[in-house]
Length: 169
Image (cartoon, rainbow, N blue to C red; front, side):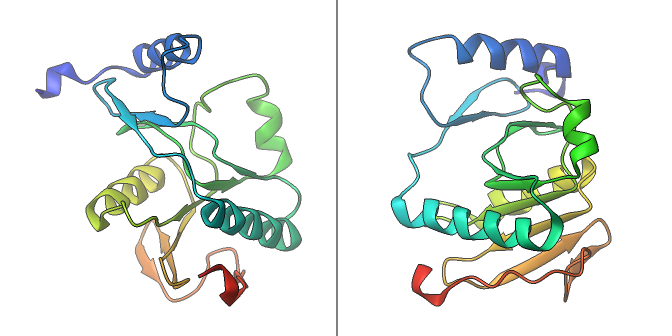
């Protein structure tokens, strides 16, 4: 693929919406910047439990607007972070829009055995370029990394911790 093959935002959204109505589209997918479908395996029960624990933790610390698996437009296509959070006022701005036309303030990626470091680095950078104030990456053994536009951080920009039960990992 060439740079001239990159789809603009409107073309990506049209492709996403067309796929959403196609019964042959896989249940879990993203689109790269060229509009190509990237299939994801169905989440495991353990992965879903981890997402739920993260959502509950974020809701307890930041408020009720943490949501799992929301599609967002980035400069690397339409991606689906595992968990996102943003204030209620921003949710009001995008009511009825799928995918979100911007990246939420906080995005969380929970690694699965099939993820590569390169893939997660690409997504992290795309979320941050798209306006996320922080990206949290949760590793396979529960290790937690915080990233902000200026790079990796020792602690959260939001001043939060994620207390995830060890039994999840």
